[in-house]
Length: 300
Length: 275
Ligand SMILES: Nc1ncnc2c1ncn2[C@@H]1O[C@H](COP(=O)(O)OP(=O)(O)OP(=O)(O)O)[C@@H](O)[C@H]1O
Ligand SMILES: [Mg+2]
Image (cartoon, rainbow over all chains, first blue to last red; front, side, top):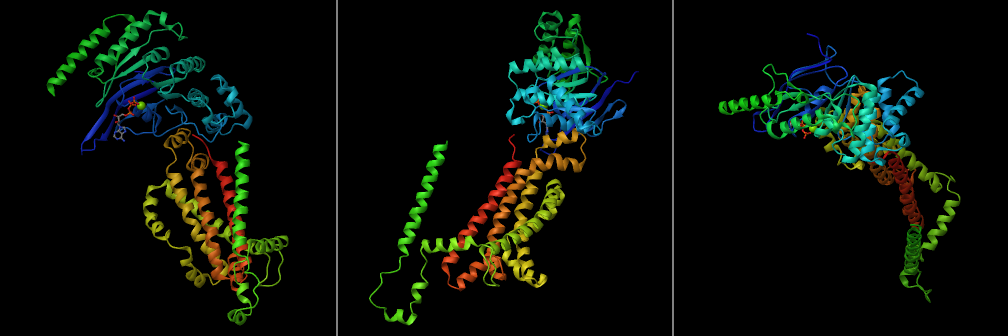
């Protein structure tokens, strides 16, 4: 079997529940990402998505399991993994440009001043912020701040980009515009991206695959849904693709009806489904997991 | 709002004139009496000398002093500029020494919960001690009055800086520290490029409190050790019963204190950031 670019094996996170016992937020998380893939993860609030992403980033430690990237175990944060935080996390005392320069300099310490500046400006212009180079983050709107944050992450050209609900705090209009920009940058760079979102349409627009998480505690990544829509995609026209609607219906059904009971394959890897194929996978997955949850309920 | 500023300035000036007017009236020497009372004759008129001088007398003296602030006519007769210079020199020396110690240790305490817990009891006991209580010990150990005054300044200005630095450093937003971590910055670079600028406003607040306290304390310290400085000057003029000089130097103490505070306020503005 070929090794994948990123392999996550048996990840779990346990917190004390405050009453002397343990609370297992998620357990036995297993998945693999291929180089150049864009994968979104969807799940109800509190199921542990951010925790998984922070473990991948090296900012948090799992209670068990391990993460291997490029054959090397991930221990602690590193420049080969870039993170876009939900709250932007720009350094407020630096200008827009200097926030990027800060990252680029950390990535390529040997570069000359001009080289760093030119590289930084290029990524800022990719997100349409050429005019705001010398403004401080406090003088930018939320959307502009998130653009800077995205530019910062892409500018360091990490092998894996981790995005934690990057558009969660933005209004729908701004969100659409920045999604388009993200699509554009991604088409140009084809970086491997792992992104958390609550927005089904956003996930379909951006991803090659979508991971569906069951509810916590003891949450799992139950399914891996293929988005069978060719790149390049555009927000304005993606609705016309029949695969779009099938995928969307499938995701919504999961989130509304099945997220409480869905389970992965017996070996712990997510069930692979292709809703666009229109085959019975979805239905059978549904009935199967319902049967299993019934069995679980009986056991409990 | 220039008009607001103008109106405020006008009001300020009229308050000043009013206050000085009342003061002047209240300190008018009594009408020249036909003759001295028995008591006054006994005092040889000295009673009049020792009443609070009117502002006009103080202003006249201020004018004379400020037109030649740096004259030096022996141990007990130096210009106000020289005396203030001694005080400012002592304050700055003690203050810079305190800074050199408080900032690194504050960083250490702020970054390490272990060090915080280990050192906190000592800080809590040492901090409330009046700086002047150290004076006898300082004089005994250092055996030098000038250095002892500087030591007292050092000990009184160290605490606000130390505690504010520790607090500022400990409360740097975890997000920013995470930014440093994901960019693989080493501990030193993280401290300099992320934690220092993030904590700078809090640190400068501590530094501003410290300079205020140091300036309060130097006057008392110089009254004790004597020799030179504005504190000694005030005390000396009081012994000479020269109340106009006492009032004049009180005003000068206020002015210099304000200048020191303004300077730190400017520095504070420079490192401030909006989130
Ligand atoms: N320090 C902690 N102690 C106990 N429980 C914690 C702690 N930190 C997080 N949790 C729990 O871990 C769970 C997962 O948190 P996480 O932030 O990863 O969820 P999430 O899926 O990202 O949610 P959201 O979609 O709301 O962002 C939550 O239920 C939370 O209560
Ligand atoms: Mg989250």
